[in-house]
Image (cartoon, rainbow, N blue to C red; front, side, top):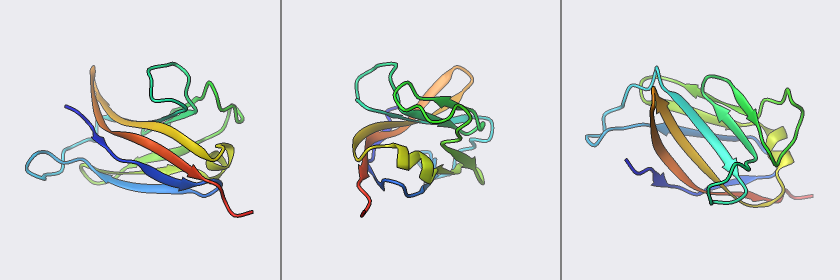
Length: 130
């Protein structure tokens, strides 16, 4: 499966909250209760180990190799709701740590050994009014 492309616009220092639905070809919600959902933000779109941060639905986080906030930092959260629905929240402190500019993200679902790309795109961070 090929994930969709969707660009995200955000603002430096502001909490980012997005809602998602995972649907089959007939627009029925797909059960994601036993799957891990991950959101990763990178500086470039090429395959590299360098990334800013990662948020996972099991509440695990990976500190980025580029962005180094406190090692106990919680970047945000992914909360699974009813079957096929989930929300993504990136904390204001995390958004404050990102310099304005263009980044790249991937949102994917892992179930056992199967990784399914949900969407990817540019992650724009606009400067806040100072």
